Length: 211
Image 1 (cartoon, one colour):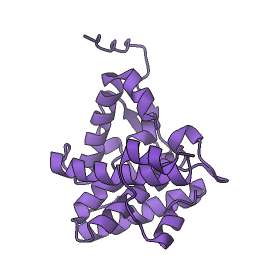
Image 2 (cartoon, rainbow, N blue to C red):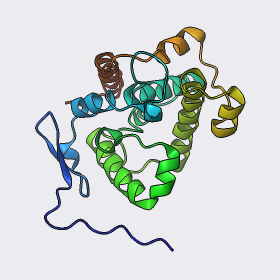
Image 3 (cartoon, rainbow, N blue to C red):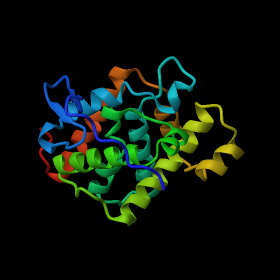
């Protein structure tokens, strides 16, 4: 049985200062300390695949989340906008904790997952989603995530199609123009703007307050 992660000492800092001025506690994150501008800014500067991708720019987590949502739209064009928003935000905790590749997450174990889960729950509440999604919805998002990972692996990260299929499943079959757009790594500024624009569009459709 694995040992529980040690609790931080009272003098340890467990919060991060954001550019918005918010101070986010990692152990007890408050939805009131979460701003979409901080999320967009951070995710646009976090690299997928530990930066081991082709192109002038990194392939950011912000661009990845947009790709996941595009895969979901292609597979389920009539899907509820709340689910699309959940897909866009599925990796939002990484604006604080970074993007660790799956093999390293497996090494770290439950400690990483518990922090990630608390952060995602607070983010969901901040933007009008349930703290915990229905398992069926989580499966839909995970399927789109794996489809996006297949495309990133084969187009950007040097995986063969056979290797990617074994690890991530099938090619999701995006239209060529869409695939070319979302798999050409953008600058951090462009990724941030496009993430914010998509968020605002989805929130506008839901009648949710984005501020």
